Image (cartoon, rainbow, N blue to C red; front, side):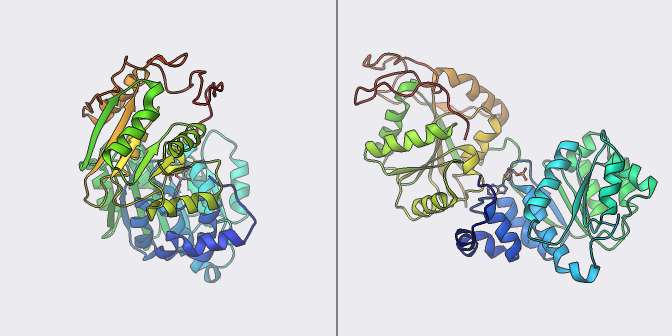
Length: 434
Ligand code: AMP
């Protein structure tokens, strides 16, 4: 992800090109988004942002990792900024937007996002949670505040002390509402809601829709727009999934065989590490398969160019790390390959969700060495579905030619020290995650 940049030129270009600009967001917000290095809105952002900008209440089914925070923060900032002048300067202890979260960590994270996306807007935010001093929070509220992000308990303490007043709240967000109910916050939430003005916009985000969440939504939201993205652990139905057992040292060869032999034209390949992504792209190019890598070490302009090239068919293979792939929404992508299995099972579901989009069938294949069988079992448990193993003829585990030291059935990373084609000593050791 890109750090904030003060250079104007490339950012301006990105803003004009950015698919974010179709969502109706202001130049200040597009600039902040471009500086984060986001190339595309995520599905929840595509669906939620226009509804919230239009002033509608929203019931959103989305879990952490989907980009939901920007999904509500960007339009919330825009709506507040639109009326910033008429509401006067940030008022002392009287916020215009309130975001409730179940945990301190999430509150801090969300408020950080508010600051990041709102950095070119004249709006102020603060975060309120328990376990830390009360007085600094009072001082921050007194300095003037537009947006408060809070956990329920400490917010109620401030309400009792009258250090915050919710009578002017225009937009109310319940983030991770299901977790809030699980943590027993329902009475606190109802006490807080009772202090808000009747006329306001309400947004509710939840990973699951239990009867309790539906009851809360029914009492809290008025004719909401309902948007939902893939559920936790739910693999898209249209995606065919296979696992090819293979020795770690022969994965690259198998990948080239599958791409060339299957006539695959557009393939997104995931690796666990930045170094692994770059190295694989280089090796595929040497095999005569046009490939490039995107990951956190590559510049924004490189990422934009590479992605555009891949979209228009100039590149056959795009190799990406999980982080770099967030927000990539390439419709009609027929093939996704897990070169390494992710350590976090949910990442597998995100990865394979890149195919089988827009009602089209897709294929997700995983190259699995012996050390990754446990990871695959964890993924199967999460999805509650088995992934079919298919051994590819000529690549049976245990049949690797003994051409180099260390060529066994072993883990993908760290790579063994071995001779490359030119006979040089190769890379050794684990590289950092991308
Ligand atoms: P969230 O689901 O809100 O916790 O966001 C998960 C991660 O995705 C955060 O690290 C965000 O910075 C990142 N993110 C949000 N929107 C995008 C986007 N459009 N493109 C790439 N990354 C994003």
